[in-house]
Length: 279
Image 1 (cartoon, rainbow, N blue to C red):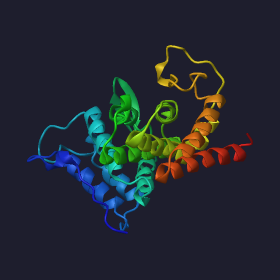
Image 2: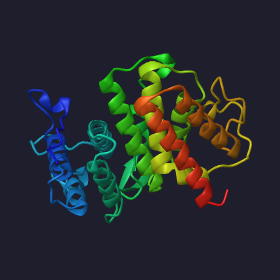
Image 3: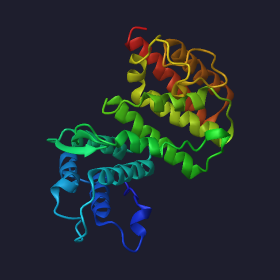
Image 4: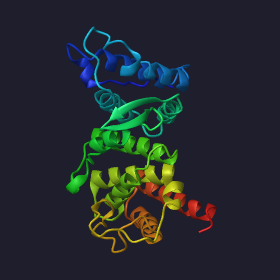
């Protein structure tokens, strides 16, 4: 398999942050298809760069706070995830690395006045992902091919982390499935939305299915609001799951090419999950 071309725009400045450079170097080495570096070794290398485990920035400058370090580090992970094709072996390796980090002996850090375990609690990963969650198809925008690819890859990364229950961001899944299946869409927008939604079904569909509930939600909770086509409950409920499955089927009958194949794959995956879980 050919080398994975990874880059960080921030490192192309005249004076890049040395810790970010070292983090990138570890990720770039670990994620290459030919790499023999283990996830544990990569995790230990990144852990050694945390503020509590180094005397200074590496350039003699004052050490940064844990919060600042975590924003920057998770930002690097997110930017790298966007560049890995969703079906590339390195996507699973990146998820394995996050899992290895969370399994390291914890160090207590203070973030937003709370004492958290680094890396056990994966502090600030959720907020970092929320900052990056800028859907390129929002408000019917037609994404470029590059923007679509990056969004599909980020969705795949987020879905895989959810499947491993390292995070609890089911709302991200609902948002994407709503955009793809509960709103009218055409062209590159439809292609991007369906591909990203399918990543959630394929990689975290079992967890989403198990998370379904008929419980009522606060009607003011816009995080689970319905799209214009769906008229059911504002929640991750059995009714909404069934609606999504039917919409994948409807869309597969309306389009061709890769989008059709992706929609069919997602619909079949949902049916398989139901059968496995005794729906």
